[in-house]
Length: 216
Image (cartoon, rainbow, N blue to C red; front, side):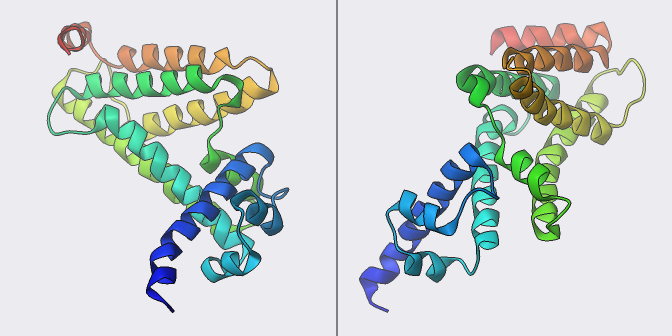
């Protein structure tokens, strides 16, 4: 293989993955074909099968790329050492709310969409989706556990269970908002989730959080 082909290989793969993401976000996994991905990327089927042995492999790569992009966005809220974990949780909800406002009725999570479409029929995709979901939940659960240690909770709660509820609210709201043609439901449900999280902690903790948020 020539030096130029080796150098271009990562770019070719990136173009194929981005094309697959665009198509699958619009029409789902089952309706997306290898030919369509090649046409969208303006590349040949030979190029496709050089990088992916199957449509499933392409779908997994597209899901992984979308998940990586999403985690990078969320990292703006929860990244960095130190800081009040409740403030970070509020920033996380702010990022999610901003995404809902930006994308409106087109708001979609590829991890959730492909998992919903294929979880019962494709174990490989189901396991990949579960891994991406758990990566998000693990960080959110860590923030909730830190908040539980730093602040006084009103009552005991399981950080992981609350994190899964938050993630399920996020994913489910996108589906229900599309079905009801009410994308604003996503923002309202995130507001309710914010109230729920605040309700887990004593008023003093919320006062400290509000003061730090105002200084930020």
